Amino acid sequence: MDSKSPPIYLPLGDKNKNYLVTIVITVSDTEGASSRTTTTVQVNEPEEMEDTATMLAHTDSELSGLLEAGDTSAAVEIVNMVTSVINTREDDGAQEEEKKQVK
Image 1 (spheres, rainbow, N blue to C red):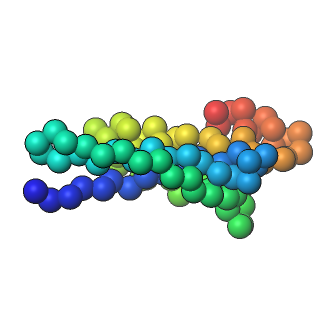
Image 2: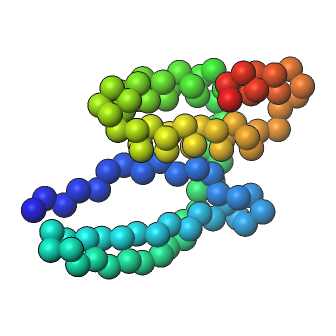
């Protein structure tokens, strides 16, 4: 009977669409009844961009814990979030190779 709402890791929104991400929310009860709604949220780039290595170090332990617990869905969300941040960066050629290695 406890409500459960796991953390959600969202990728960056599309810059050309003002960083908006559409989310579909479905709520179900134990009897099988459900309700569905859609909302839009703005997911911006971080205000202070860390370098790629620092960002990966911050998410690595959380990612490892999720994988050890068998929570592959949340792990995939984190990977998608980090990838979306890396993909939006406009780095010089030297850092482009680092981005390829991270991916």
